[in-house]
Length: 225
Image (cartoon, rainbow, N blue to C red; front, side, top):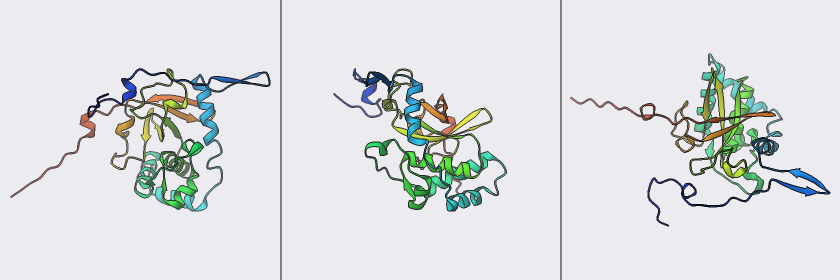
């Protein structure tokens, strides 16, 4: 196989089979595992439902201080997003279920590092402390993964976690792992992909937009005498 620069990941090009377990039988009872988006969300939900249940007074105080002078929820979540980008270093330690379960926001705040799940954990937790509604954890696959949720409703469709903020009929995707992308733009490696947005016992799937070049340009003006 010959690789070319800037070409799609090999999974987009190479024929392959994916073997999954839809159910198993225990004591004569069929136990469903995967095979639908509902079951996939239920599976994922087990990993986040017990995270950030205990209030961290220090993190809450910092979240309130950070947002107290902001006039609306958009400005508040923007301040939280940039604080996480600037103060939490992206370091991934993943082994077994650590690849699925976000760490407590209090631990991320204390240690000042975390992976994508941890950043989504602290963003959503800080938003809750600041009374910002409609900030959710999301599962998503990067552009290296070719599958949609309809095609393959298993964890193989995802390899990343972010947060999102639903505001005025729009969705702002919050990926703090990318230190260069400004607020309001999705990181380059998730553009065009589907996000599975957690809403408690419910969920929604939303496609991350591909940002037009005009929206992602940097202008510099140099004047000389």
